[in-house]
Length: 328
Image (cartoon, rainbow, N blue to C red):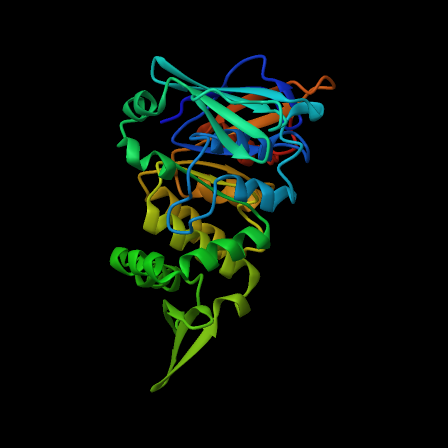
């Protein structure tokens, strides 16, 4: 598990004066522009390269989808960033560089991220896998990033519709188990039974009386299609680290409650960003084990965080206060 992260010259963050602590289930809150998305993307850089499992996109694709480009990954459009992450008593360092390909010949330990962008991870691939207690061949599957943008969701759905990828989903049983659990919770209408692969992509099977009807996932309600697409991917891959931006996007509170229940049942470490009071309320009322990082960015773009545990968040609610709006 990643226990802390430190960032320097990444996105809109100049540095983190102190490492930011992470728990098994961490919720990021803060003002717009406070650094929530940047922190998720920094965590997503572990590992810095490799094809994303099942959907077969390069890891940079998620960031490009969210920002339309890979440029701007460095603070004030510089060309160097450093990310540090703690695992027990050990530390993983990821150095990011931008260099023109015509003049820069990367050393063997540098990986190519994107056009002119490179990364170096210390220690090396094998040692990092050992630290994380994972087979080195499965390291590219260590982390998955879900963004709030519909473009990235479509890319995930397209990747899952590849026959080999869909076969992996069917073997996992997530396509029926997920829908059944969401129906049982009331987050989905009772007539839905499973997600299927059709010639034109993913479809929801709906049983009405003695007949069946198949709804294109693309035509389902925005919140529903977002959660189901992401959950199919996460459930089939079972990553060690789930990163979810704009977690509550377009979602009804019942859908949020069931999605949190499902996420908490996974073995994965979860770090999510939200603006929703419903997310915090459901975590408190469901007696989940979680922590909150209330992020704040200084005028010098230093990122700091106040950590709240579940009891502290509950105390805010008991006192009639909104923890999203209180800053020390």
